[in-house]
Every structure is written in C-alpha cells, then in structure tokens.
Image (cartoon, rainbow, N blue to C red; front, side, top):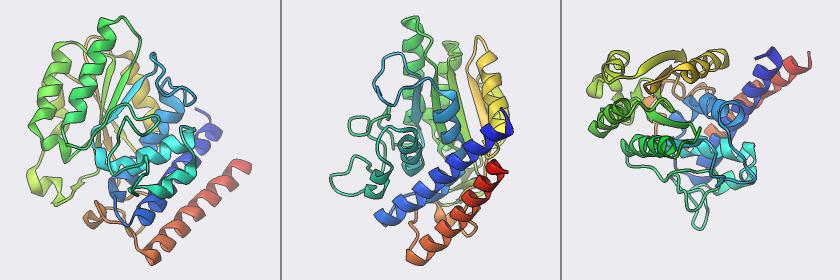
Length: 284
C-alpha cells in the first residue's frame, strides 16, 4: 500500500466518522462510540478487502460481512453509503420512521447488509453458517464478522468459535474490536474476557493481533488471514472507542448516546479539520 492509497483510506474513514456523527445527531439516538472505533476496519473491508459489487448487492459470489455487534450500524451504514450502495444523504434518516436505516441492520431493507443483527452473540453464528455453506458449495466466498469485546461475554460466541474450528472454516475471519469499553463500563471491570488471544487460540483459531486504527496494521493482519489454512482466523484489534472525536475518545458514556447540537458542531469541526489536513497531505 502506497502512502497515497493509505491517505485515501484515511480520508474515507474520516468521512465514515462524519456519517456516524451526522446520523446519530439527526436521529437523536444511536451508538457512536463503537462505530467510531470500528470506522477504519469498516473502511478497509468495503474499500480494499471484500469482493463486492455495490451495483449488485445480492451478487451470489460476493464476500459476506456480518455485523455481530449490530448496534454499531451507524458506522456500517456510513461505509456502505460512501462505497455506493445507497446515497450518502440517507444517513440523515437513521432511525427515522420509514427509513431503510434502522437502529440495527436489516438485510431486507438495506442494500449491502448481508444479515439482520442486533442480539449480541448471534451474528458470529450466522457467519459460521455462511462460511460452511460456501465450503459445501465449493465457492471461494470469504466471510467476515465483527464482534465487540463486551459481546464476547456471551456464551453463544464461544459455541460458534468451537463450531468454526471443528469444521475448519479457513474462509471465516472473526474480527474483535477490543476498545475496552461496553455499555456498563470497562470490560475488565464488568466481566473480564481477558486473555482474549489465549482463549481464541484454545478454541482453535489463528489469532492475529493488530492496531485496528492503523491501516498498515490492518493491511498486514488481513493479508496474514488469507494465508491461514485449515482453521479460522481471529483478528484481535486494539482500538480507541470514540476515535476521532476528542471528547468521545475512551469515554464509556458515548457507547449509546447521540450528540446534542453543540457537541455535534464540535465533533464535525474536529473531523473536518482532520479531513482538510489529510487532503493537504495528499496534494503535497
């Protein structure tokens, strides 16, 4: 990846973060914190990693993505919009009556959404089924699923991981967003899942740690996952919850709260400044 390519991805991720802020502000509800921490991996998946076609969202041979932590739909929607699945202006209809962008992803309503999710722990199970189905059909489809680190406190997650290892689903990549916070506080205080890497390894996964807010690290992690054979991969991302908005960073209160008008203005000013700086760098 060249510096220019990385800069372009950083610009897109910044726009994804803007979409998160704009959507949650317009809805007066939503989950900005975890959407912001995952903005970089959403960008990587939809602009570099996955074999997809925005003009044909139901293309049978596409790669699949399941947002297991479905409450971070604002981030997924922003990535889908900027990738061309639907107009960016639709982000302002988040959670509105009649909108196809509801609080959690709905595959029957939103182009580009491969699975309806929201009940924590269930998305990874669906991803396992997709991966096994692709293998049974002899397809090269790869399946990606994103989980929260608080979500992995759910027992169903570990049943699914045991399933994935048993069936040698090397076309499955489980991504864990380890930002350290969940709705009630720090995950280590609520119910510690640590050591996450050792547990995933014990369940038969190839564990690939990386900085989930760094595109060089994401590139290396996903490249390594493609080389893994005979078992599933787990990309364990260390991220910063609320990444990109100073007053939201590492603050548990922003797990599920929308910015008011003043906070919206400050957040957008910060993100616009970041975008302007990236644009200068790309032209320099």
